[in-house]
Length: 360
Image 1: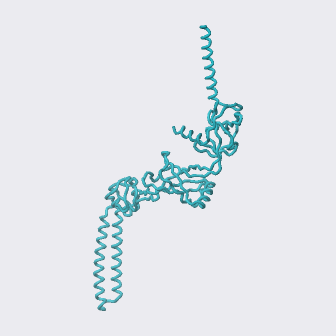
Image 2 (image 1 turned 135 degrees about the vertical axis):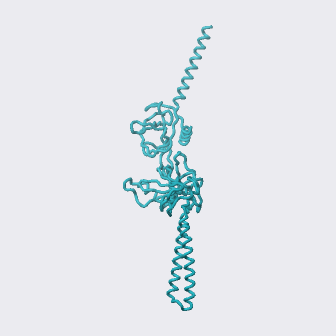
Image 3 (image 1 turned 135 degrees about the horizontal axis):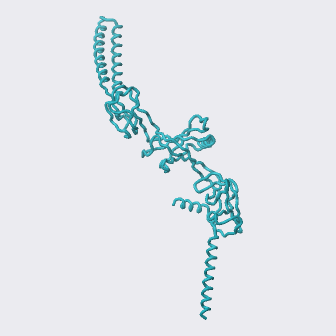
């Protein structure tokens, strides 16, 4: 009796183990499958770009002299009309005072000549000469005043200062570079587009109008304002076969600066394309394959041709149809000709799971 109980216990444990093993094997042999989906979608084509301020100029001295004052600092935001540099004005002040005196003298001379001309003591020609002399001295005074005004360099528009190219006390020549000034409130972003893509965009712009674009900054974050693709340069570059596009971006927070680089994300619309998850494919040499499962659960290896690559997704140009079922998980556990159990998961759920997995 004792041995019978032991035998029954061992038999029960063995049967339980076999049942667990079969259950585990059954769970392992259940593979997730999905079907390709045919939809209209869009992708972002990427183009390396150069970021330029819409208004970026060099500030140069218009007069010669010693740099007497600097009213601003490098990197400072200045307002339109704000004084920035002062060239020593003493010589120009003296010239203006002399011109004022010359005007006063010519004015007196003209008035005296006019009195005499009214009494027919002098000829009208002498009065005209006195008037011409007065006008000439007034012009010289205006010129002296202009020269004096040019000794102060004011900001022609509001913007951000660059570094100084001169220092206080330096002897500055006429036309010498002082600094640069950038108005970064609006940015022009330039990028090169191949000829074939240019033709596509040119056709679309005529039909749909200006197109919005996004900017991927150097830190791999998307700039928080959309840009507007506005214009194209006149000529193609014969060496590269590209043509330059320009997009305009607002920059109210002043995050971007003149001279930065980035990547333009230009949307391209795809109609009626077949999509599959990248995880469902595997490579043999330079060809791509998937595992297709038929109605009987038989695995078949099938070669496919992919087109455009997107995050977690391929477009398929040949080899599959929306009615096919392909394995999306456990590709390394099966081979051609295997019979498996499947669990269907919709395409969008598969892609969403992949996005969440890679986000982690």
